View 1 (cartoon, rainbow, N blue to C red):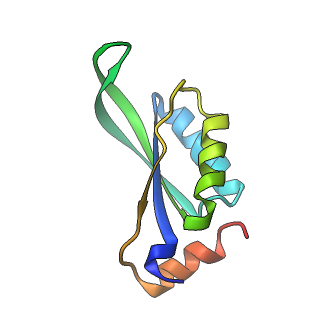
View 2 (view 1 turned 120 degrees about the vertical axis):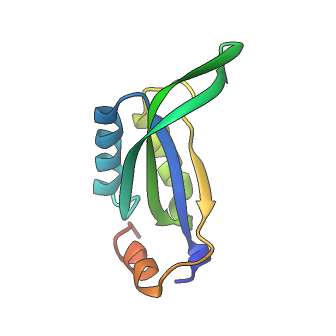
Length: 107
């Protein structure tokens, strides 16, 4: 597996409990090898005005070929009307870690 075969897919949630629950669901479905959940402060356009507030970011580590399935799963299980789902390719990483991501995700 090369680094280009791995993505970090990000979404956010409005509550830590919801973020942790979604992270657990995704990992149990083997759509990501792991998920990291941490607080962020978001500023964004919504309903015609600038909004801001605390959110919980989830970064999923997964294989690129699972991006569409992971995106669909997040949309299905997310409470937001328009959840963020952004995938960023991993451009470098340790061979052992990349192999672990491959081994722990669905085939």
